[in-house]
Image (cartoon, rainbow, N blue to C red; front, side):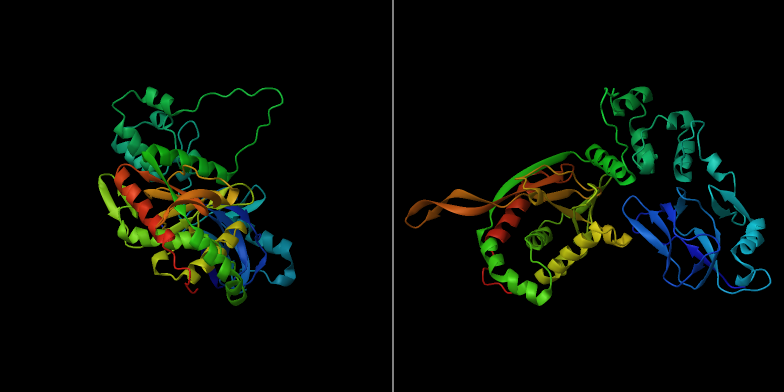
Length: 430
């Protein structure tokens, strides 16, 4: 009997586990090549697990809601029938009865017991309060003599409030101060609801966004700089070429790829903006991978990444922007398409906002926000004196990590982006 193990694949850089959100197939179901059998979710993206063989799903090792480590066997698909596997003609009930000797039923899902599994592992990783701790966190706690009771007082920044390695290390830095006080300072104030108030439970993605935002502000001292840019040349150029571009390429030419190109060019001159911080080490990224903050129909946010943005043409950037934005809203992004970002751009102008103060997408050190493009009266210097003219103006704001980016560098970077945009070639072909 040929059996195929279905593993949880690598879900992207730094991702070590995923939550099994839904089984799409039941034990005993026929499965075809490339057919989805389960849905999983990480702290970055939701995706489907597919089969790479034809066969019958004979075992599953996890139930919905379980945390699955990357590389772990999720299920087994049998591709041939023999004496151990009842023929299809015997019917699904007989088939399920035949394999039931090796399985246990949990929440109406048949879960097989993997060979050599340490059934006490999950229990041993939980404190008396029921809170789960990963083996890595437990190892650090053991070395530092941190009890489960003390771990329970650490506010977790991970998925579903789980304590991560960084949470423990940050806690240890301030451990000389009273742990009770540190815990209270990090706690949210008690909220009392009133009659008529509506209470809405955050969904999984919104909880992750909330944790990431709090963690970013806690990690990086944010400073935000602003600059206004005259984009009249770009507006006139786009109006001239957009119809022809759409007929030829089949996608709309928006202003977004223009800002991506300008940012990519500026990042080449200011590598410290395209960086990360590891303790007291500065990591200057070789690649320029720009994330595009995208609002989803359900009100949540995701950041797909355009890899090697500095090496792409404006036409290529336009295709990438449209494709990623479209698939993000349809929940069709692949895990690696939201990983590896080195800088992020968010567009406040999409909602007619003039500007804003964005929060850095960790572990990056800067994020650029683009406001709405508005017609404004401005003073222009001419050979015959100053004149007032109507121009298209946009405000750019950039939040940056003051640990390694000072105001001078942040200001110079914005000035460079401004120069690139204001010196646009109105005869440029795309």
